[in-house]
Length: 338
Image (tube, rainbow, N blue to C red):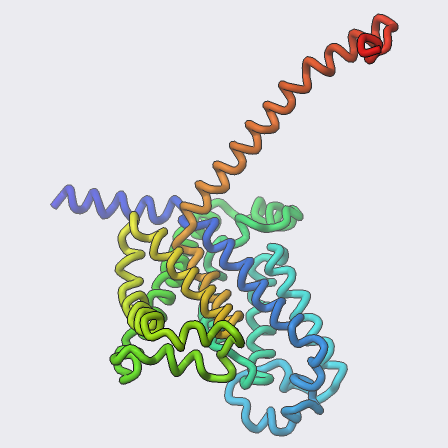
């Protein structure tokens, strides 16, 4: 009993004193900012037609069908629309670059959800995940990595009392755990839902999905859905992967491989089905499981760079010394070559 109590106490001490997956959640924050920025940029030329008060969904109809909240519902003024749209793009860019801290991330969440609600017909499913995950990110220290060092956050952190800074670690770990649990829940529910479909049971679902006009990649999708083996392999492989992904990430040695397979899976969705926003959002959340491998890769890259730099300096040092001796003696450095 004492050993069990000591083990639990040690686990709690570790949980409350060491922040986990700092690199992973920082990558999640940067990619979610990138997804939001790309959404604004991709629709920029047609922003008035798609989201404006006099666009394809007029302001009055938008107000009638709105079931949640949206800042775009506060005024039918075109000036208000333009201000919100450009503010959303700038805030998304700031989140991607690591500027603004938690306040900027919370503002990004509000602005992104508002533009999503302005025209729900343009959504691809990634919006729901971003809406859930960003509040979890607010608990984490997701600005520790991949952020521009402007110094404001550091000066603010120095003024925060020590006990309050200590509380940030368990809150960070709780946020990481909630993101991981949410991703596993998405995979399991999606997999079990597919299991109940007749097309997924008989192995033909991929054939029908890839023939939908909105999801077809001309010239390439036909290479898949016209091959029976690829259709069956893709259909059953998708179900098996989705259902058993949580078991893979629970095993530390299998976690990186399961995550890499997940990233490859969603890259194929982005390429063959055009659901880029959804795919990148899922990949952003997958980075939570890849934090340690990413840290090792970054550490190796820095070490390798320092070694190469040191070798270059060492090789250049004798040449510089000979040049200085030649100049000091009054001779031309290239005299011996004449």
